[in-house]
Length: 103
Length: 273
Image (cartoon, rainbow over all chains, first blue to last red; front, top):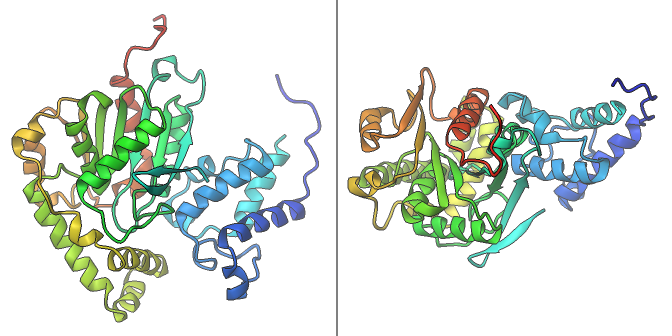
């Protein structure tokens, strides 16, 4: 049966801040030491020095924070390697926002 | 993140339960993904094959080998029996009571063959991706590759060359492997000790699927590797080097789910035709 309810209101800025907070936990003190400001175009691997295995951890943290509809691993399984390598914080936040807005 | 002490080492793992009701025929099947050596971690499976395999209804276990990913990195203790013992303890700790399908990439496949030989009752099938059993021939090849790689990664200027030739991502991976190889005895140890004879390999009785790249690490002796296991099913990707898993993951996904369906145990409640 089609869902006729109104999709929940999602604040993309709040989602972005939430994603940045979780990533900050992964990077730890290095973020301050490196003086990196996490922006939408900050690359997960290149700029933050994180590994793919950290992306797996982030996926688990995102599901804990935003609910099981947010399944980053499933989303990334459709990507090619180059897209995963170049993944930005903004792309991750946009994915979360889209999943939450899908209701 | 989920961690266990395995043989005294902090071990990072991830469980992905199979989607309930997706396929009753697969309800009792468990896949264990075993990644490769050096730059690899559980991510190369978790971000490619794990979600679609779980969506098919199969339980998935992924873990970081000792010295890799977010698992502990001891200075020494990297013989094949160490890795096999880790896998055995992990499976016991996670109470994987049914025999499992071991799916190994590169060195991970070699671990899978060793485990299947040592614990035949705990393995339903082996799927190896660009790997071969640990014979003397494998040990010579592995020792050569690891010695050359370690030598390359000990020289700082080579990282510039790697970036210029392959890109920044490969420089990061090389740095990762360099750290793992130069801070541990991994590269010196792994190809030492008793290897499997042709008779040992022939004694592996579970079904085996060997997925290879035409131009991968087995390209020099594709026929020898294939002849070692005459009962194995072999699938070769043409125009493909060693990175079968990351470059062909969509095709491997299909091969894998079909394979597990074919080699699943009878479910508790048979499905009507």
